[in-house]
Image 1 (tube, helix red, strand yellow):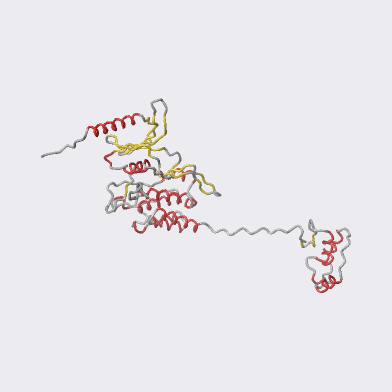
Image 2 (cartoon, rainbow, N blue to C red; image 1 turned 180 degrees about the vertical axis):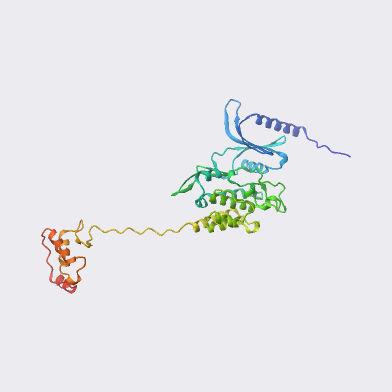
Length: 386
């Protein structure tokens, strides 16, 4: 049986050897501070880059992925897009991504902050997360779904496939009842099992995921799509409102009712986590808008506070104790008012008006009242005063 061995030019061999030696040098330049997590196919480390002059840069996150696992391809596409000038608000910056022997080595920026899981543990679960935090999370996933295509290329969605509380990093997060939740940034991490959508594929080649957040199609029942991440986002909304993971296999409507989730928000969760992908929201952005609207419907309606009733200082006050002379009322005007009230018939007297009038007059210093002109006297008589 004849076999053909690929032939390479001297220049190609020299370039390949130089790249291999350079990768070995880069590996030797990283100092491992600690191992963040380890699995059968991937090791995640916190590292510092040690310069030849004794200085260091970092920290960085380095992922060493078993090449035979056929995962991590999204990092290479993200790295290429960033090197071409694209900027992503909700994704980490990749410093280096290359194949070294049987490993794929990915070095990226270290995001200082706390995970969504740690945030909910610290601040507690509340429907207020559905107002600002959750729509921002949906926008972040939408940025991932927009793909990593460069100018002139057709963009294909990138499906995360492992959205969960520990893979959402937030910085500067704080919550108060008055201001709600405020935060500086929200970043999605761990693209290890993310994949690019392939038109015409029947199912995913690699089946990974976290059970409470992974839809049925992620386990061999079809190809994952943006609606697969919508399913995970629905589970994340349930977590934000309750502080616990949803239980796979149990009716989501019953789980929402048992946890006291308001009906409008429960409707959003149930639609997001429908078993049939066609019945879910079509995009992460649509889910974010629906969640904000459901939150507004779920807020208790509070009647406006009544306006305070104030008595102007120049207004005469009538009390059961009689006519009170208010502060700021001119003495002649008060005397005139008391004089008019003293002419009210006895049968119309209420709250001791007539007796109060006499007490009021007695308590005031004697003043000279202005005399009425004949025209003013006529008007006063027509109004019932004589």
